Image (tube, rainbow, N blue to C red; front, side, top):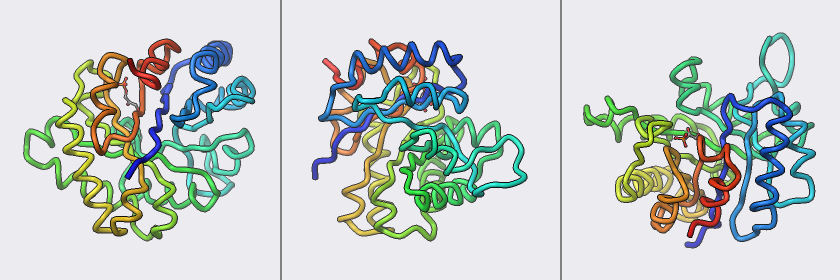
Length: 251
Ligand code: 13P
């Protein structure tokens, strides 16, 4: 089964509007014409509109870093799917480990967000991954199993097929420590087997599983060569167009 690779830049809480536009233009210049890999950038909410304009006419798509599941109303500080759609968003990152760690995200809220995003016609990037303590304590499989099944509870196979999963071992995020390609692929195969048990092989084979955690131009090729690594969710290296381009088209 060949799945088109998908590289997304998660800019996290970085960039003013001006910086975001400059970065987006740099990304378009470097990889805006690439068509054999899907490419997206996910700036902070405040910069979505400006980045949407900056990437117009290129193959680079726009993603958001989070969303609220309610459609509208008294939810101070939150942003809805329709608001994201109105500024040209295609993808939405859901359940990032930083959301889980610092802002009370649970498997239950991940599930609500995933359903809302799919209902709005947007495409979820659902993040899963274990902490170092969980890995060392032998709980890795149970954690990933719970996160994956929790995220997809009540979601049909046809909707699940539209989703990307990002496997991000928390101990590899922003630390410079990358999972070895073998460690990463093992986790990806484990996740794929959960998807097979939920949806059957045909659907599971369509779903892309990105790796995230200190992915860089010099380790991207080895990671992306493996059977079940279908792309990357890139943090630090997404803030420099040349580094990001070196992951989209690794040498
Ligand atoms: P780094 O690439 O900075 O490790 O971040 C990974 C990440 O969290 C992407 O969502």
